Structures are given as structure tokens and as C-alpha cells.
Image (cartoon, rainbow over all chains, first blue to last red; front, side, top):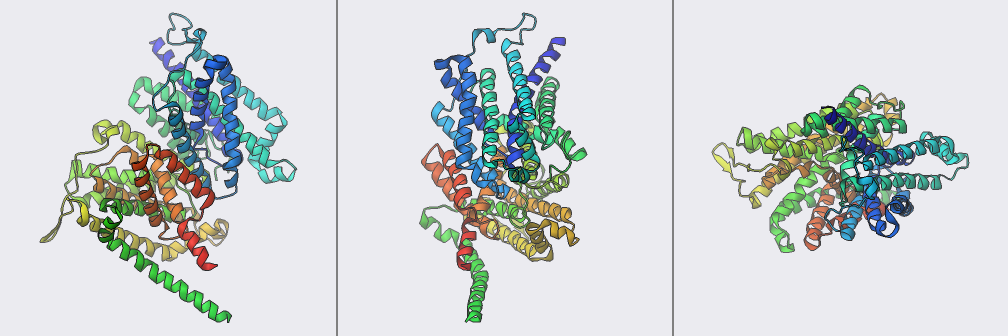
Length: 289
Length: 327
């Protein structure tokens, strides 16, 4: 029994970690640029596939490092070519644009890497369980959670202490004033978009090792990430962090009790939050309107 | 000179206001005559009507209130499932199915609208997307009732008894097309009446300047809520017709991709215009039908259409025409 509970708790932690990584990227872009990036799940898939292609050449560890950076680079190109053009227009256009982009990227991945699932090879060290009693916890699971923790701490430290991070946070509250103070907002937004894509790419590499690769692997993570943002509170990255962990845990624990309701419970949490605390658990008053 | 110009442009505006609807209704009424000549089939026109009605319903909110929902597939799909479930489990009556489906989708939208009327912009949109997916997962996982991933089958539209007469729409084809057109006409008439009423004008005022509308004492939240609710009822009605058209309801009618299609139809046609969504639906349905018969990579083409529309035709076809006439 203890094992079953522990199994579901670790599952929840891992699912939550993916939601967090994905939702933090979405949230960064949403806060600064007011764009919902529908293609975020496809950037995740892109990161995974790039790692798949790169790892025979540069090894798993090299791919883990390079493919998120490449994803971010592709993000920069996409932002410069398309997304930049719709920043000051009605939100309907940004949604349609990233929605179309998601279609193109998903179909592109299917075209290049094929429609069928692909396995992602892992180094032998990571594939082993940590002990024989805890056979379900492989080193890879520990490794994933560790990477996510390091990344999240790094991201928050970066936003807190670096100059660019400060500007991103300031821009979240009042972009016009930030621009007036002489910050190049265009570059700031491009950089911020790239950071979001970097996080998506990293989650893609990590997810590939756990569930393998397929062209729509990011789709299942997209909706929970939206919900993590709504639950945590728009405008607050800490809120997104807790929102992601909360719904990941809730989904995993519900799976243990009643598997059919594991999706429904996420939506139930969202409805409860919208009803009882519309600004989200940690969101700032007024950010949602 | 200038008065003559004004008179001329007014004359043109009036002729547009009168001629355009006449042309549209004439085209719709004669579809079974001319569509086969162009290589189309009547079921395609029926799809245009259904999606057009759904997009016009969405446009009450998007174009005439200025509020973005990216989750209208939920109400469309609820309408479809409502109609399908009624026909399959409750009564074999087409009108009852239409009423039940419309009520199911419309009331779900009305209740959800209460939760989100204070949100604006992308946040409103994000809540509508997430709520929409709830129904998708429900239809997907509640296998025993909804048929799960395979969709809801084993129901079909029933002939309608009108006193001594019977309207046999069970065969599809032309009779069913005119049945759809009649319902479409009633719905569109109601929509036009609503948008021309003081209520509709108030929605426009909110779209143009929400803060000013609020200063004028207009209860903005209540109007947005009503607009959302009405728009959901029309889209749900379209959903019931879709279930009748296919004798089938599947989870994809609830998926947010379809919400995206409704929005892009509206934008292609022109979201500040009354008839734009219908035109957009016609363009989109034809293109999709054509492209998906040509290539398996139709998703890329649809995605590229989305991107091109956003970057180069944001006003839509009717919006561009109107601008040209004004200039």
C-alpha cells in the first residue's frame, strides 16, 4: 500500500514538473507579450525530436544541452518573422496565428520524423531503478525532477537578480513605462519568447525519455498548462509553479483512486478557482481583467 | 457637388443594404440548381449553412461585442450531443432533438459565462478554451453513454409530422437542405433583429469603448454575459443541425480545433460584418474539402491559411470590400 501511494506521489511530482516547465514558458510569453502561444506544445515536440536526431552525433548529454537552445533559436526566428507583427492588435489575431503555427509545426514534425512513435534512447545509468524495493523509481525520474528544480530555481534567480530579468518583470506590469525608460522592448520580447521556447524544448527532451516521441506529444500537456496558469493566477510565475504542481498531483492521485476522472479533476479545480477566487490562487488583483 | 457625392454614396449604401441580402438569399435558395454545375454537392452546401450559422453565432460575441471566445466548439458539440442523445435514448422526434440540444449547449454557456464575464482579452479566451476541453474529455471518456472516441452513432433524423402532412427529411439531399435553410433563416432573422435592437447597439457601444459605456451607466458585465449566452445558443443550434446532417456526433465537434475554425471563418469573412462569417464558412469549407482530397498534409495548408489571413487579410473579405467602397 505504501508503495502504491509512493508510486502515485512520484508520478504526480513528475507530471507536475512537466506542467510547471511548460506552463512557466507559456506564462512568461503571456505576461510580457499578451500572446497565448498555442504552438508551445509543438515547440516541446520539436525539442524532443531535435534531441532524438542529435543524440547519435553528440551523445545524450550533448543533445540535452543543445536541443533546447536550438528550439529557442527557432523560437527567435518565429517571433521575428511572425509573432512580432501582431503584438499591438486584437488578441484574436495572436491566437489564430499561433494556432495556425501549431498546425504547421505538428504537420512538419510528422512529415520529417514520420507519424509513428519513436523511442528515445537513454544512457544506461539513467535507465536503472534506484533500489530493488523502489523498482518503479528509475534514476531517470529522479534526474528529471532534479533538472526541473534546477531550471526553475535558475529561472527565478535570473528574473530576480539579473538586469534583463528585472526588465521582464517590470514589463509584465507596465510595458509602456519600461519602453519610456529606454529599454528596447522589441529585443526584450524576442528574448523572453526565446526563454519560453527554451523551457518548452527542455521539457520536450525530458518527456521524450519518459514517454517516447510522437508528433502531437505536446498537445496533451498544453491544456493542463493553460489550467495551471488560470489556477495559479495570471501574472504570477510563482502562481503558475504552484498551479502546475497542484494539478499534477491532483491528477496523479485521482488516477490511483478512479482513473477515469483524472482529467476531470483538473477541470474541477479550475472551475472551483474561477468560482471562489477568480484571480487565481496567487494572482494579482486586476491582472486577469 | 459635395451634396451630390453624399447623395450618391448614400444611394450606394442603401442599395448595398437592400441588394446584398437579396443576392445572398437568392444564392442560398437556388443552391441545389447551381452547385452541381460547379462540381459541388448539396451536402457541402448544408455544411456551409451549419458552420456559417455557428460562426455567425460566435460573431455576435466576437464581432459585435468585441469579446473573444476560443471555445465555441464546446457549445456546438454540446448541441450535437444533446440532439444525438435525445434521438437515441429519449424520443424519436427531430424538433425535440433540436430544442434539447440547443438548450443543453446554450444553458452550459449561460452558466459558464457567469464565471468569466469579468475577464477580458486573452484571459477570457484562455478560460473559454480550457472550459471547452472539459466537455471534450467528458465525451471522450464517458464511453458507455457517448460512444467515446468513436462518437455517438445509432440515431438518425426522423420525418417531421405537420398535421396531415409529413416532411420527410430522413433521406438527406434537397429536402433536408431546405429544412436546414428554413431553420437558418429563422435564426438569422432573429440575430438581425437582436443586433438592430437597442440591446445590439449597446453591445456595439461596449465594443467601441467599454469605459465610456460604463460611465454612461450601461451594466457592461450583464451585457457581455447576455451576449455570450445568446451567442452560445445560436452556436448550439448549429451543433444540433450538424448532428442531424451527419446522423453522428463525435468528440471532435467539441475540440478546440473546431473553435479555431469558427474564429478563422469569422475573420476570413470579416468579423465586423453581419454576413461575413457565412462567407468565411463557405470559403473555409470549400478549401478544406478541396485540400484534404488533394494531400495528406492538409494540416499544414490549413495552418498556412490561418497565418496568411492574420498577417495579410485581417479585415476579411467583406471588410476589405466595404473599405474599397468607402474609398
